[in-house]
Image (cartoon, rainbow over all chains, first blue to last red; front, side, top):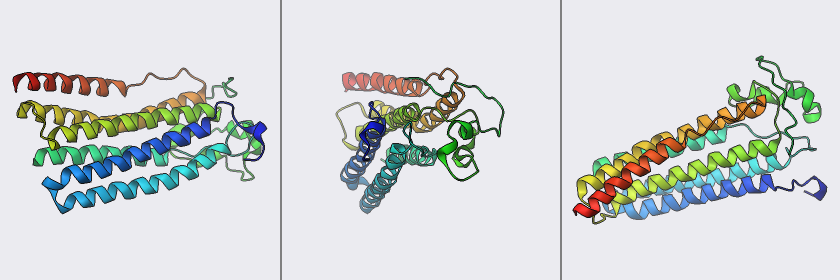
Amino acid sequence: MTDSALLDRGLQPERTALAWRRTTLALAVGAIVALRLLSPVLGLRSIAIGLTGLALAAVLWVLSARRAHQATNALPHKSGHLAGGGLLLGLALAVATGAALGLVYVALT
Amino acid sequence: MVNRTATVTGGHNRHPSSQARAHASEDTTPVTARRFPRQVYEVGAEPDPRFTLANERTFLAWIRTALALIAGGVALEALALPIQPTLRRSASIILLLFDLAVPLLAWVIWGAVGRALRQGRPLPGSKVALPVAAGVSLAGVLILLGTVLH
């Protein structure tokens, strides 16, 4: 980003990038806390759940960074376009799966 | 901020966006046709990207809410809090059950708002708040009862 005149005053792409980061970090922290809390009940399986969550967060971090770059190029007076909703659907499904796993855990204890 | 694309075009397979942002791509296929989901991108014209980004942040905020509800539901059981066990368990299950709907509804609403933005129509209300409010209220009452009864 060299031409500051093209920067959106509301910093929309930056705010969106930060929202993705907050979400990704929440996912990572959730995975670590799950690993810690669930280990007395689930044993080694809690490590698998924790690592899956962390891997998911890592993938999300990379993909959302790419998305943010694309968003900057989609600002008015620039020529790019915003990304579609594939990543959003993936994230929604992952979180719904997390809720389902939580239900399984509560049912098991 | 002015919505540059207030034109309403109901017809499918029409891509006024190619007119609005003709310089967007050398490719003759309009960018709108190649994005997922089709239900959103097949209508209307490309809105101001700042509105689309705001819609995306709203979706992400609901996702974080959903993550917090999962954490709450699981922690209730995992931490063995001093609450009457049956009520505690019920509160946990209610939080998690309602939370199944939250990310999926957030996705649906994101698409509906995206469509409305593209068509220059009024935005639909957020239906995600209902399961969140209902789940948290119900769980809250159960936890309160469980704490008193313990």
